[in-house]
Length: 103
Image (cartoon, rainbow, N blue to C red; front, side):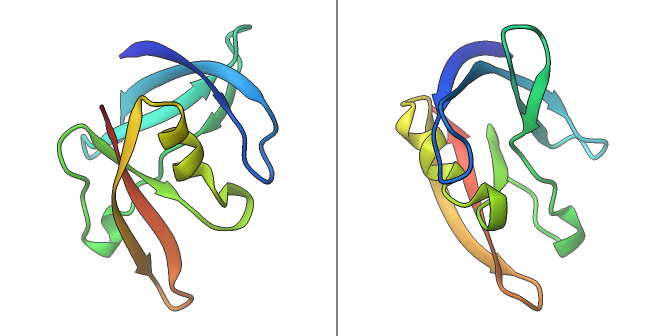
C-alpha cells in the first residue's frame, strides 16, 4: 500500500513530506515507512515488538514514542489517515509504544 502523502512534524522531525509505504516484517506483521519524493526512505515509522510477545491488530502497526520518535504517533494521527488505538509501556525502562491503525 503506497497510498498517502503526508507531512510530519514532531519535536525532532520538522516538516518532512513523503509517501507512506507499507511492507511486512519477517513475521508477517505490518511495517510502515516514510519515503521522500526522490524515493529515499526517510525513516521506518513502525517497530516490531514481537520479542515482547505482542503483535499488532489487523491493519495496525507499532510506533516507538520516545527519544527521537517522541510525538510520532500523534503526528501520524494528525494527518487524518491514522488513529492511535493502544498505548503501552514495555521493558525495564517502561519505553512507550503506541499501536496505530490506518483509517
